[in-house]
Image 1 (cartoon, rainbow, N blue to C red):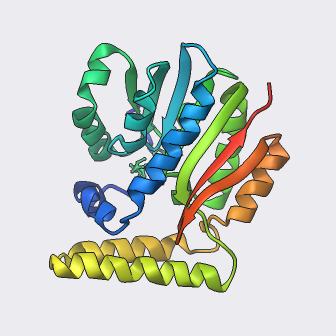
Image 2: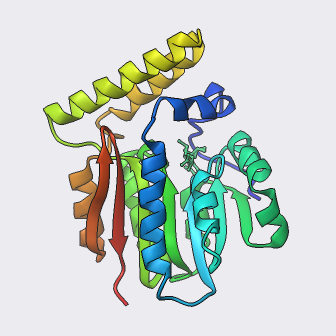
Image 3: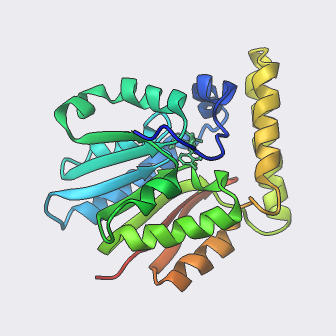
Length: 243
Ligand SMILES: C[S@@+](CC[C@H](N)C(=O)[O-])C[C@H]1O[C@@H](n2cnc3c(N)ncnc32)[C@H](O)[C@@H]1O
């Protein structure tokens, strides 16, 4: 476990304590997870165990939980926010006890820098990459490429921005949904935090356009880079490293 500088911690306050409420404002999250699981299954079905999977920005363990449904996988989850990781520890304690899940408190870039090349068959993530600045995200994609084994796969469920008016409409839909869910519960404190968080995500040095992500991954050498699902702001991106 790392105790030094954990980098920018955008989930240290209310956002981690009330993370479950964020889910209510995204009613299609079940679909996102189903698409993730289906991509995962089609990757694992022809492969034999053991396969190593890495979940970046594990949070409360939503993506790690999906990875663990595949019996062939051993999973490592990393997150820089102790309060989020604590939720994963609680939610997934049987898998930690059985040795299939290892959790680490660390900054993602720092953690990846310590991993040997080609050490993970699957690099997965949910709603983590958009939190990074564009510079750090570029470095992170490079590290993902380095640590991914030949024939490996990247599956990322996240907020990928589209271009122009359609992005504005998607953002408006999402903000309106936060108001609907949180005003009804009189959670104006949380409403403020989420709206500010989403506004910061729109900054020029942080926003994550899908076209840039696809171009960067292709430049690194990834093949079949595709958005396989989209609903409003949220999308699932898949990319493969050829064997
Ligand atoms: C929106 S949550 C997503 C949690 C979970 N993966 C999910 O799908 O619901 C984003 C997570 O990324 C973590 N995170 C943000 N920046 C990070 C970094 N630089 N290194 C490691 N984790 C980071 C946050 O602490 C938070 O738990």
